[in-house]
Length: 478
Image (cartoon, rainbow, N blue to C red; front, side, top):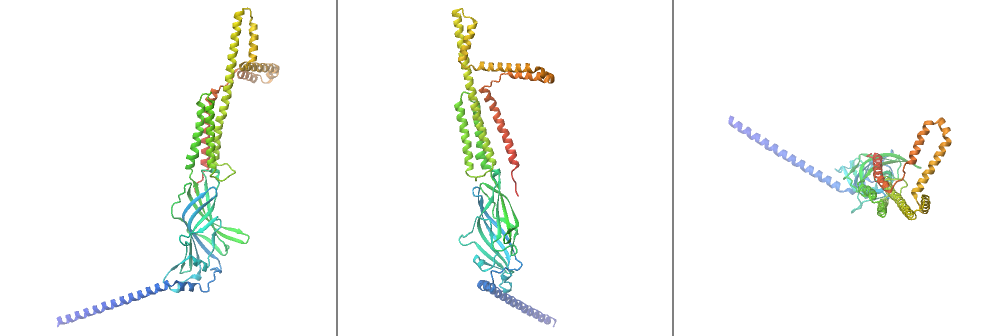
């Protein structure tokens, strides 16, 4: 009996387990069928966007604001690239994706139960709903990319949030101050504003991440060193308008100008000093070198100015170029001075040689005649010297005249001067005598000697002052 009872009890347990398994399987199958049916129903509803749009736009007025208290519009930018910056036109070009987000409860579709949290629509849908009509108020030219179709779309969220996106190409102005050129920086600005609605109706705000970059901006002439956003209100005759602004700051890459302007002009200035080592009689070679150096610097200066706008103020590069031209011009002035001194030295040598010839002739006559006196020699010497421009005698005569004048003046004023300024007068008199007796004659070789030392030192001093002043004025980031 005990064995039979256990056997029956085991059969009952097996039967209960089978029934439980079948019931669970049926329940799971039913739930799966229900879920599949529900998902199929969601897909069928979301595919029919025409009914959803018609339901949302029924009795929709695009002229009315979504809220009587005004609309807060959040904007953001995603910069794809900055393509060009022009100094001549004073503007820059950039491609970016512009997004604006606002709330319009009339487009809330949560109650439609379409099993979707958002709907993506084409850009043409903007014409059927209210939009803030923001624009870039300071742009010179802007366009929406059409490759291959217009790059715009709108996303409607179930809670009434509208997200509109454009892919734009914009050319906008830049603020340029070329006083520090080529070590300058420029600021390019975009200003967003609602064209149709004032600050009471539309208020613009930047997103938490207002601007993002798709890639690092690489330009041949400039480097992006920073950007910043700002917000202000602009006053118009018919009210206040809300503005959102973004500024990009670019620093010029000055390496090109160092190698194309600064180094060549420095070498040209230095090469103009080679003439100081030439012989003083090689005037033609010095003139050729000086004029060639001057023309080279002038040509380099002109090639730089052709790519810059006309400015009434002095630029950093102008100071360098003009100073280089002045240094080279001074070498030409030095050349003119040594040519004049060399000419005077030749005249003096010719005059001295002629005087010596006449003296030798007189001595020969004296030896031949035997009766000529020293007075005759002196008379003939004076006659011959007067017929030739003897610069040495004229200099001595001038010194003698000065000596007589100083002596006579000193004799007339001795009593009065010694009465009040006894010791200073004695010192001044000695100084005047020393200055009088000193040989102030300077030769062309001496001018070259001093020039080959003075010019390099002057150019070195100019470089120290120039780079110290302008490097201290270079701007950094925002």
